[in-house]
Image 1 (cartoon, helix red, strand yellow):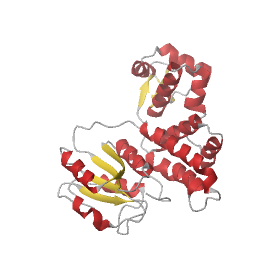
Image 2 (cartoon, one colour; image 1 turned 180 degrees about the horizontal axis):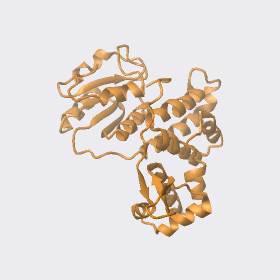
Image 3 (cartoon, one colour; image 1 turned 90 degrees about the vertical axis):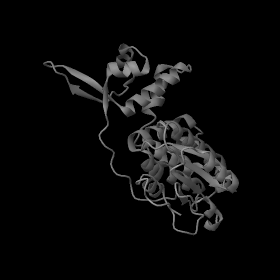
Image 4 (spheres, one colour; image 1 turned 120 degrees about the vertical axis):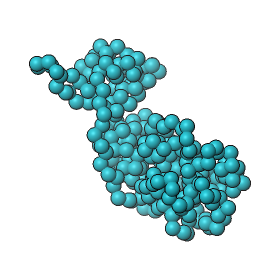
Length: 289
């Protein structure tokens, strides 16, 4: 799934919760939330008018809750509340661009890099974050215009790790029904684009299972056989040149076959947005090859 591609559609208005509801979610006293807001400038969504005269109540967004949960986890692991707030909120500005992300990587500050990515994911969603933050940073370090690829291998690896960590924190949906299978063709070890697709599907309420790098054809056939009910789609990623006729045996009446990545010579999903659009179509849509 290459870059650039058109920007994602604007996000819908976020649902909000009261301080009491958030305190119950996080198993914290409401007074702790108030203290964090007062001492560390931890945001609390927006302030809404109450029902009584002159009363106002703080409302928390989904992004606030994710960041508060992250702050609580950091404190539980021994970090001071001030440092935890700095990492979970203030270092993780959702407006951070590729230059800020690359600056954190140059310092090998993986915590700051993950925090930036998490904040961007919460505010802008997976597709927009992938297109405008992840891909530009990856291309700067290891793409065709990179000036010193060999000296940046460590930074590419750290960036890939940070992106993967942030994507793994996108909540997975219930998987009681049919799922999407994601795999790299045999010999292909670049899984990062599939990680982005898995997170984008999760954000849209579609469960997916990652089969990983370099999956041979017989293993893919067994995965299709073992998955019950049959998966809605099998997505195959190829970065290196791959012939599409090598995977025709994977086409089934009940499972779409979606080829993605720059390695396929045939028409396929050429971006994360393309793949997501195809996979969120009606289940009755014919297989894609």
